[in-house]
Length: 172
Image 1 (tube, rainbow, N blue to C red):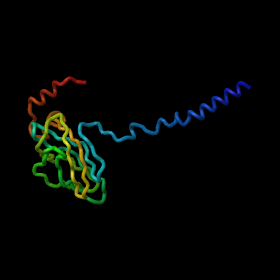
Image 2: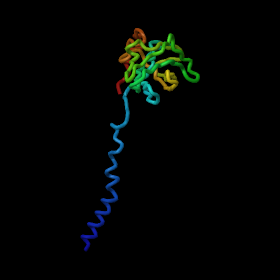
Image 3: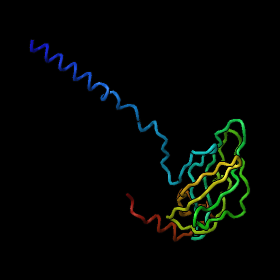
């Protein structure tokens, strides 16, 4: 009789614990969107903004770099405006609309980016708004990076002292 009680108890414990033990696989880290990069992403609109950064060779100016992915496979999309948000005095110099073909990706790094001026300094974040042709608007806090390493040459020639200081930083 004691053997039956032990078996019954073990069965009950297993029945209670089974849902807890089997639910561990419902939220895998590999199921979540994660892009390890310096730039920021926004996937709220019909056009995804991916890897957005402002590359700056000198304080007060820079080049906005991002990729725009059109989620529509039927209609082209346009990026109509880029501007600073709130107290940010950021302005896009000589901005002209950017067309993103249906289902395509436009990488501004391949097209010289969008020159910007204003409160831009390496290591800071600048609040930026992008306006799309369909009326959607997204806001991002875009990091400002130096014109060195991976971003070298995206905002004119790099300042040698800027890149030297960056290469002397201790590795983590």
